[in-house]
Length: 363
Image 1 (tube, helix red, strand yellow):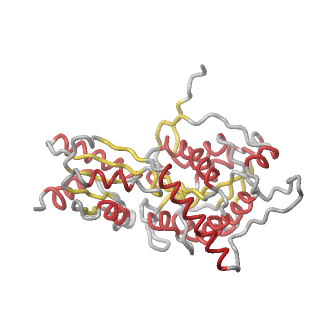
Image 2 (image 1 turned 45 degrees about the vertical axis):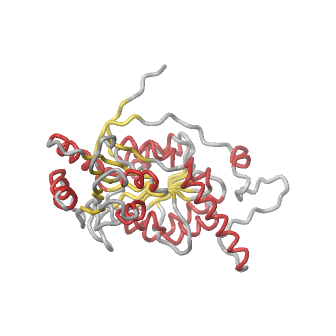
Image 3 (image 1 turned 90 degrees about the vertical axis):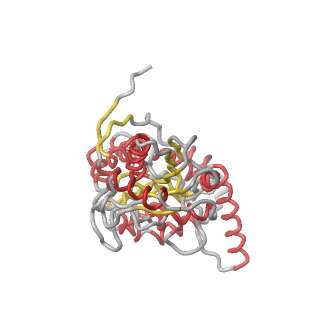
């Protein structure tokens, strides 16, 4: 067995290398801090010469998402990456993809907002990702990496889920994970699918190679309200299946926990250090890290809520995930929030102080 090669690279670089290795057919993106290394790394690696992967700098984020829509309509593994304001511009295209049931991958390396904001890290796109920033009733599958290794691993996972359910998927990272350097083992090379394999695996795709020569029509438009309602009912059934089968999460020292922290992405790494500080002081704190932000680990948090005295939602924003935690617990235990905004990142000591003030010392 060949020895696995351990490399040192940024999270953004890991995304790019993983895309090449997992059989991605095309990347269409536009530079924006703090995720520009994704496009830069792909340009340096020149995968069009080795795997045939298309890499194109589009003229805008709007153009990027529509290229993903087009490539996905043909059954291709296509992806884009951007940061918060850029992903905001993509929301119409993402909604169109969800309505037409087109797979595709969007990577969001978040920065502080609102608006142009700052180039420093944030987690304030939680609502944009999990609620769907476009129009209509739809959901995007959202994975939240907490390490450079997961940045690499989640590319293939996101593509697999996206094609399994014919639904856009998002890797919701942030400027910390995107810019930090860590050891990573890249995934093995997966060959790009042949055109015959695409036709066989994606019979719905508009490939132009169907034997019956009847065109597949890819659209989210239907002027018949009854048909549109049937489409929406079908989507809701699909979303219910995803909620049932695809929830991913991680727990740390929750078996005897009297208090619980819930955090995702880079905030979860900081919260884990806060947990270690608390445990050293004799405070029984556990950590639950949602890996899928949608579908959210509602059942798991509801169960934990019945066992603990209080929950602290740790987020690098004004408090967004806390709404999902409160919906999960339905008042079974106090739920409070601690976070920083505008690109400021909380320290473990700040989180410990907030846990004591907001949860432990409250009567």
